[in-house]
Image (cartoon, rainbow, N blue to C red; front, top):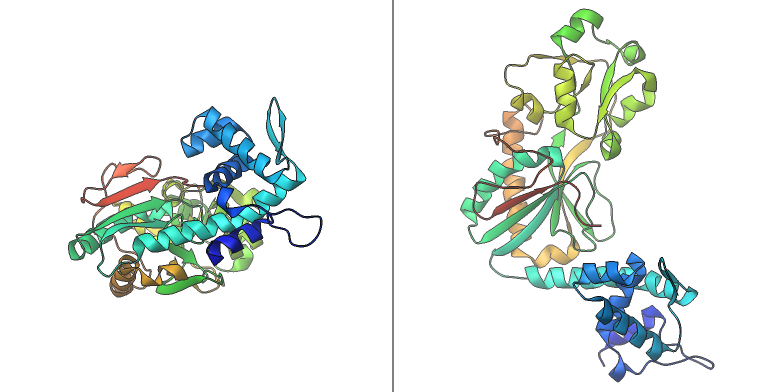
Length: 359
């Protein structure tokens, strides 16, 4: 038995050394049983685990029973509402979590370890920015026609450690993690705007001390942590926030309607043709913020990841310069594109998936 497999069992705690313990016979160990039982522990029932794995109820039950029989211990307490973990079951789940992540990364690394850039490349980005990436990736595909790109558009931070995606384009401070590699693409500035109708009625703040004399349109969720938004929220009376949304597209629409002052990115301003907005400058001090290309260190050998990194680090600064340092440029809006639906990009080989994805 290989050293990796021995370490695998040891980390699970199934092999105990010394007196009073037990040993698992490696020759009789069924890896599928452990994998299936892990999903039962996560899902809390045989049927839900079966749905995740694509197995029928009897197969899931047989694998759980076989693993428990081999170990000589109970991992679950059965009851009508599902499977509740015993102490041994909780230990199994705790030890399995990092191992499952290791296995996903191993498979992801093996699938992308290539010499020529070809195959499928999964990347994630913030949902509001995915329409911007579609025309950019069209140019990328022209250079690398053998690469099929899948873009997961979501506000969730998908796990690079688990291999949910091969790479990610993230906004904000530098992503931290012992195994993450982050390459800065462009600097970002957070700017606030108001409609002319709002300015006519309320004016604009001229200093940070005047923010509570105005109405605000602000994002929710993870976007509240963005530099320039986080600092403003710390200063504002919550009662002055009259509209909130997790979509910058919605924020832009509310600002255009004159509901209040809000953060409007270059992408939204470009999409709002014919809408004149007035910039509000009130001395907000924000931390440095950037756009980052991030991947796990296991992806260093992937020709696909290297190709996209080289392409973005070359093209993004050019586009940022055209936009006066804002950092976003849209060649053309994608008609009919919705952040609430899934669309197939017009370019063959590029898929855009919107909304939350994965667990």
